[in-house]
Image (cartoon, rainbow, N blue to C red; front, side, top):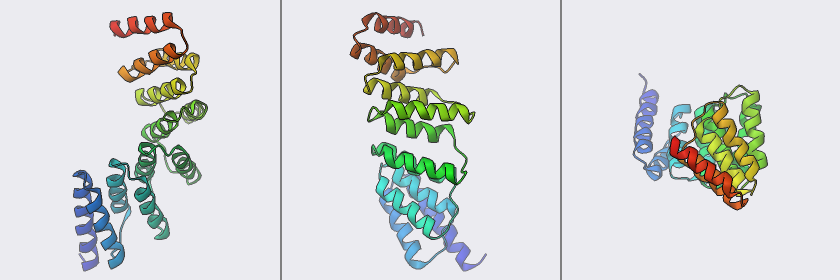
Length: 212
């Protein structure tokens, strides 16, 4: 192996170790050293650095790394966008998450359920239920199976948007397609009923939860 290859492998292993250990600042320091030293960084290194930022919700740094990736014309993949979108979701940046989702679609990068779930979750934090439901529709059209997390986030978006009927409709769809609702799904659905003053519906959900 050449010196360049060994340098890349060394930095890659060190950044990956920092990412797994939750040391996002150290990962960024190593990444900056790579950039300054003009050591070739591949997709794996960029992804590890972005994942380290994502785990701490450092969306600005994650997007900065993505920007460097674009400048260096390094190929991005599903993991790249998952990390960037998840970082934006944790920071409540639903517009940035949506923009990244659009870039993914434009570049024909393969989408996964976890990607869509992160975008739906970013909508949920602001009660953007219309966008959450639209994305569920996109997933269905793309034959992507929505998970318990996806539906829970969409129900939460409806609850935040005071759309109790839509929240209950989503909960009903979960049961129909055999996606097992978790405690979060039950809790936000019940909360939606509370906001809509439909106590009998809330009691029905409590009964179902007790049976499950």
